[in-house]
Image (cartoon, rainbow, N blue to C red; front, top):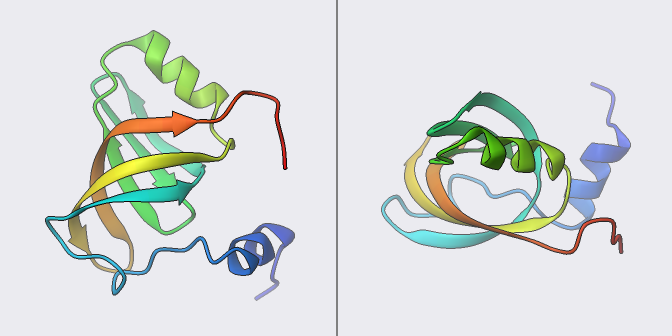
Length: 105
């Protein structure tokens, strides 16, 4: 399989959270970014974080969902409560902290 620059970035900064790194029932701050939005239904947004974590976010309205879409590939901290583990880590996230828009490092 061809490795992309995107994959190299996650490997270089060790951003992946494996199922063995977390315990079900605990809450962790996860640094990373949204790599895909699987569902953008207000009240139940499902986002993939760092290619290996699925978080359900209770964003109540379309304005919040639109904001999340706009910040999709921005770096942030996702406060995630872990609800399950298999090939991917599953959890819920009610708090996301993004940096200032347009600033890159």
